[in-house]
Structures are given as structure tokens and as C-alpha cells.
Image 1 (tube, rainbow, N blue to C red):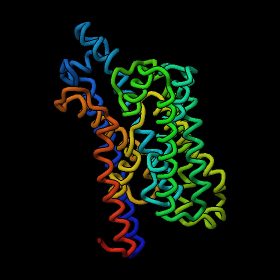
Image 2 (image 1 turned 180 degrees about the horizontal axis):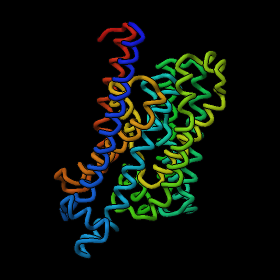
Image 3 (image 1 turned 90 degrees about the vertical axis):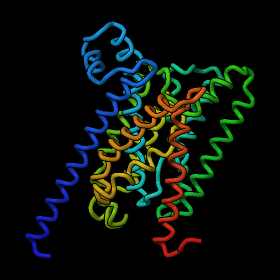
Image 4 (image 1 turned 45 degrees about the horizontal axis):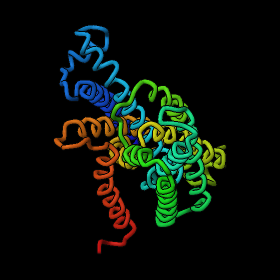
Length: 347
């Protein structure tokens, strides 16, 4: 390929990436408008826009601005940090199956939150909840990286993540089992399923600062992720402090996921699916994949939250249940694809 052909190809790829990013932004905005209009009282996009800016009836303003807007903001922000965390972990470990849920971060964050609730240290609206969830999420990712080591293969990562997830789940079940208040246990059980229902601006104020700081930390490491694709030794020769990078990623994932789990419970597989949806369009450069993955994560969680409100059911379907139903088959597909890529064939 000549230099001119290479320049043309690079320009086309850049335009394709820009187009995909703009399309994801437009999709996220559209889904936010649909989310604000979806519920027992259906509102048109025009009515939603009028209500957002103080127009329309008082009833529509209350529905949009006070009831549905916090839920929509949380769906966008939490989906974004989950998608971004998944892309960052995949870039750090150079493994397409890496995600917060597979490494036990959401499960561990849920355990931290449940523990402080059960002990009576905090209720579901206390700032102690995200702090406890962040500490537990930080510990889970740190332990995983310590167990897996620098050059962990796919099997080691999955087994270590499974062990941490199982331990966090067992610890959560033990806390619930030992709780003396049955109503508290029921509240925790429903909260663990993952839901955005009945969330207020107080929940937004609890989660958003941690999510924003976590996202900023992860985005600040974009160039380091690109260098890491060449291998740790090469990255270090280019000036990347790999140990510092790991610490930053752990901190960013823990802050973001911990803050998210503290207000919604466990919502899995967004961090796994979002980067894979964008990679065929954006490419395999982990630095360029971060923002599109965040936008894809927002779109996925917004769509899932809209779906749980319109699916006919006798009781409210939790959004965490729906994302798991969709995510597990996708995860199995990725495992089979990795197996074929490694020459293992299909049994």
C-alpha cells in the first residue's frame, strides 16, 4: 500500500469512527426522550421537551422533571460508566472477556452496601452506601489482579472472577440470613435485583459525583491503554508506568461501579456487551474505544429500562434481570468465539 492509499484509508476510518460516535450520541439522546415519555402516562417527545423547559401542563412538568428525569439521568450515567469500565478493563488486561461483572466488582460493591444497611450504619439514601460499595469494589478488582498476575490467560481470569463473584454473593447471602428484620431482608433482596424505579434527585446526587470522577480517571489513561497493546515491556519503554496504570484503572472502576451499584443494585453485562458492539466499527484501539463504549452502555441501559416499563407483566421487571437475560447468551457466544479463535473447535 502506498503512502497515499494509507492516508486515504486512515481518513475513511477516522470518518467512520466519528460517524459512529455521533450516531451513538443521537441514539442516546433519542432514548432519553423516549424514557422520559414512557410510563403509565405516555407523553410525546414534543410534550417531554416542553415540560423539560418549563412549558406544557403542570402535571406533565411534575411527571417529566421530578419523577422520570432522575431515572433517565441515572440510566444514562450508570450505563456509561459500566460501558467505559468494561472497555478500560479489556484494554488493561488485553482480553475481550474482561468486564466489571465478570470480575465481581458489582457483586462486591453490592456486598459492601448490603453490609452497612444490615448493620444499621446507613439506609438506602445515605452517602455511606456508595462509600462502602466503592471500598468493596476496589478490593475485588485489586484481589483479582493480584490473583491473576500480569500475564493471566482467559481461563485464569474467568476462574478468579467467578471465585470473587461467588464469595461476594455468599457473603451477601450470609448477611441477609443473619439479619433480624425480615422487612429489611426483603428490601435488600429486591434492591439486589437491580432497578432504576422510584429514583430521585437525591440518588442522582449520591451516585453522579463518584461516576464522574471514576470516568475522568479512566479517560485520562487512554494513551496508556494504546501503548499497552504493544506489551507491558514495550509500554514501559515508552514511558508508561504499568503499576500506576493498574492502580488508576482499579480506582476508576471502583469509584464508578461502586457509586452506580449503591443506588441501583447489581446490573450486569453492560460492561461486557457495550465494547463488543462498538469494536467492529471503531476498531481495536482501546483508546478510541472508551467514549463510544460509554455511549453504547448508556444506550443499552436506557433501552433496557424502557423495555421493563413496556413489557406486559403482573409485577415490575427489574432492569438487572433483563440485562442478565440478554448478557449471558452474549457472553457464551464470546466464549465460543474465543475458543474457535484459539483452534479449539466446537464440541
